[in-house]
Length: 104
Image (cartoon, rainbow, N blue to C red; front, top):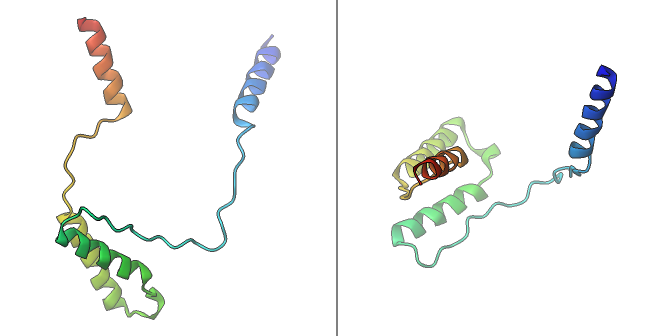
């Protein structure tokens, strides 16, 4: 009986995970370009332009101090970038729905 259950569980697991096709990543990385946003403020446009310049740089020819300066510049940009909004995880949404169902 245990062998039958184990075999059935194995078949179910293989039928669920088997059909997915995994595609290998391309050998050459594609260029990542941050798109220009037309409605953005001038500060945001300047930041986007600078980010595109940094992405286009060849880091192999930079010294370690130059790379460190770029890293600090990117960290400062990230700190200054303010994103407003409320982010809810899937778990939080489920909890909210359960509370609403219990109340109503």
